[in-house]
Image (cartoon, rainbow, N blue to C red; front, side, top):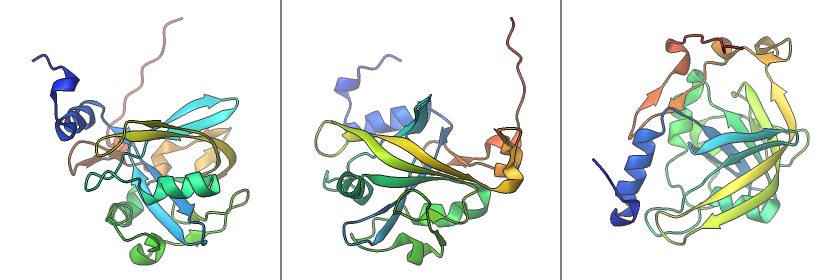
Length: 203
């Protein structure tokens, strides 16, 4: 099968991407709007960029219903701050429930029962249930396209990292105890630690 992306409707192009690029880590992003109301939403287009400076990025796509920007992106562009909370198995259901398209100004923490944790370097709260939180200031945002199917690249400079004590040792994260969750295609998720293997690089 050979496919030219420009021949596809955006929904079919999206399915092709998310079915091919798997598993994907989840950026569980908390922000505040200009009135100080909290917002919380998951994004599975997420990765690291560099260690020095410590930069991470995620891509919020436009809403499929009307092509508008999502609340998370609006908030980040307004306040220039956000927190990326790493998702573990213990609160996957609450994370999934924040993906509901609530009206602007609705606090997803309150709707899902997740707990706000005051951040150290930025104004938005972190998710207390998350074992790793990356407090970020906005480094850059790039927009690609307009309308449904288009998206943006949000690059954040990590200003502060909070890690659960039991996870951190010798400068490393114990991923077995982190129990991260990844996103597959459609409604499917994965537990990456269910089956792992080691490969040592040849010198």
